[in-house]
Each structure stands twice: as C-alpha cells, then as structure tokens.
Image (cartoon, rainbow, N blue to C red):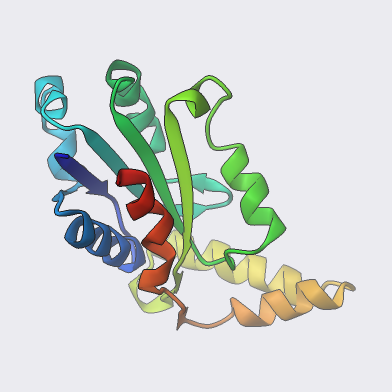
Amino acid sequence: MKTAVIYISQTGFTKKYAEWIAEKAGADLLTFKEAKRKKNAFFAEYDAIIYAGWCMAGKVVKLEWFLEKAVGLKGKKLAIVAVGASPNESPEVDAAMSNLITEEQKQYIKVFYCQGGIDYSKMKLSSKMALKMFSTILKNSKDPKQREQGAFIDHSYDVSDIKFIEPVISFLS
C-alpha cells in the first residue's frame, strides 16, 4: 500500500510521530509546506494519506487544508493524527477528537490522538503566552485536578511514545 504521511510541527513532537509512522508503514514523508505545493494528481498516486498536526485549543493546525483535499480522496484510507499535550486517556481529548470532523467526514476519515508534550523553548511567542496564561488560570482554580493540570503544563516535558502509533499502523494494515 503506497502511503503518504504529511505533517506540520511547531516544537517537534508531531514531526517525531510522523517520522515513526512513515518508518513503520514504509511511507513517504512530506512536510505541510511540501504537500501544499503538490497538485491533486500527486495525491491520487497514494492508497493511504495520513495528516499529522499539532493540537491547539482542541483544534488541529491547518486541518482545513487536509479536509478540503480529502473530499476528492474518499476512496482512499485517510486519517488524521492529532498530537497534543493532554494525556491520551483524558475525557477532554475524546471530546475534542470527536468534534474535529463532521459525521459525514467520519465515514471516510479516521481520527487518532498521540500524546506528545510541551517544549516552551521551541514555541512561537503567541503560543507560549497563551499556554502560560492557561496554565496560570488552571493553577488558580478551586478544582484540585485543574490545579494539578496547570502545574503540569507550566513547564516543558516529553511523554511521546512510539506505542501511541500502534492504532495508526493497524489502520494502515
């Protein structure tokens, strides 16, 4: 099965997952910028196309581009791999992933989530400021779980793990 993995990464976590998926699946790996320059005929060559993007506020960056392409690729295996800082088992993750695409799109696109981490040293200033403000709001919450989450995201960390791509690789098989 000829597969393409397209990714956009700000701090490196999504890139790492995209590389792992491409390696395990024997897929071609393209950055978002490279893929954006390709004509639609290029995507017709593939049996499966994976779009990996990082999450921000429950959304996946540049997902609209992939969803527009996906309309013309319905006969292929299509998937979104969302990479974020929240734990895989978080109820908020399930809710966000469920709302990424419409019910119609769910008929031909599969959504996966992989926990990555936070690297403040590689973030754009606007992202860093937004996340730091969110962390402060959580740390000041009356809810102990929110205070704990705020303290956790207040610093850089990496919990990415190759095991999180197993469902993606199974989907491609």
